[in-house]
Image 1: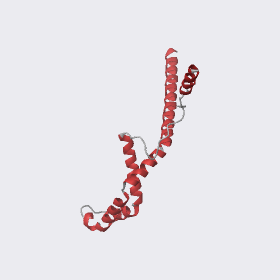
Image 2: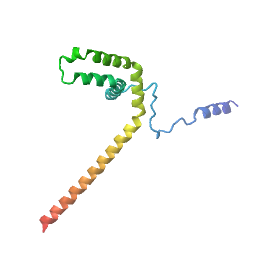
Image 3: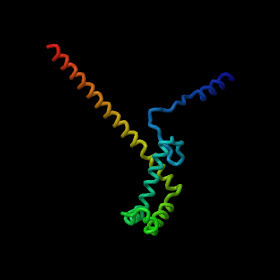
Image 4: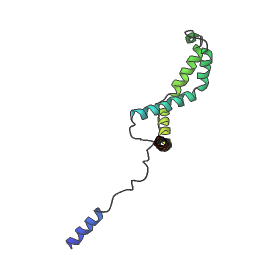
Length: 146
């Protein structure tokens, strides 16, 4: 009887635990893995883009005021500059950076697919160029042989 109880114990622990590895990696948007420096740079660019989008009217007003001005833009366009800076400070929060990070992770698969398509296109063109070069060499050899 003791032998039968140990065999049932070992059979329950020896169940296969391998998970399918063919599925693409899914990122947790709320608590993602640390990103590399270039990836963090991409997130920062998205973040700055989002903040500038929030403050587009203020930025445009300052830019219009600063046209054809150099040093004097600092005090002539002071009101527009302060409005622009306060808007950017109001929107440049960690929450906005988190939203940019989530956007980056959400578009990860799209960027990966585009990169793979570009590599396939380049490889196809490379094969075409090699084929054309070989055909040209064959024509050159045939012309030299005559």
